[in-house]
Image: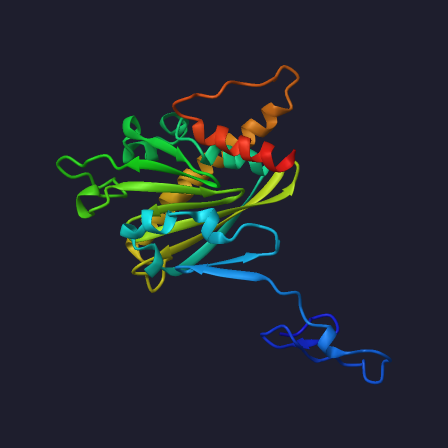
Amino acid sequence: MQCRYHGWTYGLDGALQRAPGMEGVESFKPADMHLVPVKVTTWGPLVFANLDGKAPPLAEMMEDIPSRVQAFGCEQMQYVMSRSWDIACNWKVYVDNFLEGYHVPVVHPGLHKELDMDNYRVEPHRYFSIQHAPLRPIHGGNPDRIYDPSTTDSPEAVYLWMFPNIMLNVYLGQMQTNVVIPLGHDRCRVVFDWYATNPPVDAATDPSWTKLLAFSAEVQDEDIEICESVQRNLRSRVYDRGRYSARHENGVHHFHSLLHEFLT
């Protein structure tokens, strides 16, 4: 690894191998100039880097997530592609929106066709929450449907969130990871990565993937519109605060409780 500023070169173990222009400098010891070590853990195709030495290990954060999604094949998935969106809202507004299906019937008509919202439930844990979204059954065939529950032993979608800003949308054979990056008090960037057990040669030309990506973009555009609207309304002089829906927003309440715990 080489620094693009002054050309110092490091090995993959972080040791300084070459420092141009430092020859003869008094008390300069390359062994003292190694890169800062970082905890790295993997799960399936994902790599987690922990810059905080005091943070709990990933296994403690994830608890039993790997076993919960084992049937979806997450650990065998391979990277497909990435896309990012810059959104005019605070990062917490975007997370709030992810953590509840309350808005799906109103904001996402296409997604509402896919999910059985009557049996949608949110299950909070210590550092994560999991949304169970059963897929609606298909009667007589429907070419407009994206997900076919009759072809899987796991006829549901699972939406996972790990505190504070990582989300996973998990379906049989494919998943999306969403990382929300704060850019300011009223701006954030959401980075989507797609993974699949049978990745296409070219997602841009594969018919099933072009349909899937178009649907994903449709849902994301709907979320962006509503999140940016919420951000504007937070500045309203008449806004105070709302109430949680005990049935639909227990995941949002869980997120806010963790924020309060870590910030006070």
